[in-house]
Amino acid sequence: MQEVRGNMSHVDDGTLHAYLDGELTPVERARLEGHVAECAACRNRLEEERALIERASGLLGLAQPPERAAPPLHQLRRPSVVWRLRVPVAWAATVVLALGIGYYAGGTPGGRAAPQPLSLDSPLLHSAAADSAATLSRQENEPLGYSAAERRQVVATPRPPAAAERERRVDSAPALARRENDAFGLVATQTRPGAPQEAKQAAPEPQLYIDGVPVRSLLDSASAQSGVIAIRARDSARTPAASAPVAGAQRAALPTRALEEAVVVRGRAASNAAAERGVLVATQWPIIRRGPARQILGAEPMGVPGLAVRNIRRSPTGEVVLVEQAIDSVTVIQLFQQRVESDAYLVRSFVADSLRSGAAATERLARFIGGVRVEIAGPLSADSLNRLLEQVKPIGP
Amino acid sequence: MPEDLAEVYRSTYRSLVRFLYRKVWDAERAEDLAQEAFARALVHKPENARGWLFVVAANMARDDARKAARERRHLTLLKAEPGAGSKELDEEIDADTQRTQVRAALDQLTPRDREALLLWDAGMSYDEIATQTGLARGAIGTTLSRARRRLVEAYDAGSEGQHVARG
Figure 1 (tube, helix red, strand yellow):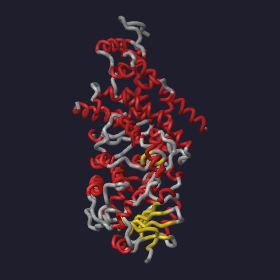
Figure 2 (cartoon, chains in turn purple, red):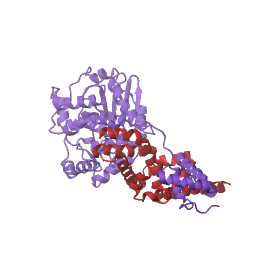
Figure 3 (cartoon, helix red, strand yellow):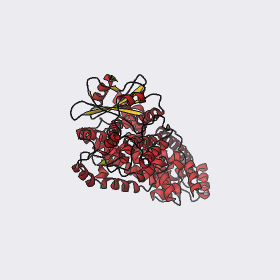
């Protein structure tokens, strides 16, 4: 065994690894190669270390993430990974916002707008962006005529003073949430179509808070399919669980526990958000008689037999019929009904598809009866809603 | 600069995901974090984008781990679906024992050794690793040799332990 050659003693492990990694300078490299050529021991060690490196890198190779294509760089401006917004889901969130919050915000007391008059041939909406833009512009800019009864319905949505008070109290929540997003230094454009951005600026902050969290962020988090997000929002809001201050009598009936679930339960958040959306929408939707409802659906409106029909309403765009039935004096279920061939249905089913996580929570709450899709919402457990939904059938005059 | 970043994105995105994956052990999360790192780079336009990205990514992974721990605690307190937070993780563990063993083996390295090894595996040079970790450049070879040896030994010890436990 050769001890020394020239100035070179045996090579240490670090140098062997650096050599094998191709990280020695040419001079170091030449010296090492010179030594190894003469020194059998170091030659052996070199081979051992080569094997070790291969072994280690093989082990690391066992812990590889699946190969997936990188999204285009220009699509990377996302609000925050914490939300885990994926592009299609962001779309869905847009639609949900447009359908739910948009209507609500558009017609808040003193509201600037009136729902569009019934028009069955209103232009069909082909994209989420178009959808929300159209919805908003309709709400903002079209104080079009509709019957006195309908107007009364929209305007006469008394808000309990206490609720308004609470609302003011939690007003700082969105600001906090915004600041938190700003902290990421990211611009929230591009993954969402432009329209909803404008919507955020044009519309007032959502006035419904659930557990101190603005509903908009709930909807966003619902779209992200994770209760974790909502919890984070709760933290950032730093508001103790406040019951939801909401307009509309039936809102009072919603047990806060159910709302809590929307905040914490993974996957289920989506369906609960749908329920929220339903309740939100309700006061914005004009009451109609059975005749027009039949016309919209091309069939008798659906309901649960034996339950009193409280109201039949239609969506401002005129494509969806809502039958509200009272279970008792404070509990109302809502049945959203829509002709299957309508394009708007496709939009909504897209929402449902996008929002659905592992458990088909959203899916379970809708059903097809004849040519009509019926979706149920209400302050009840998913099981109860599902059972009620099974009983739904056309309700005669 | 944007062109530079586009180039870095092409050449480095996968490595960054791989690097992050060995920290958060969730492929989607790793992708999210990598994408956020690049999104931040778009805003900040750092000089040395590659190095900057790995620093930011490492920090995000660390924050993420803390946050994940906190959120898991919340979920437990709030009685969400059992194991909702770690379900994916559990599935992964069931699905791939080898990966779990690699992970366990990596856990046995010192943070510095592990970092150097992961950076090397993500395609960083000794110079870059030195900058990143604050180690002297001349110490990188030694650090890597130690990290590799520990990894292999810990892995072998782990799988032997398993065989013994099974047998």
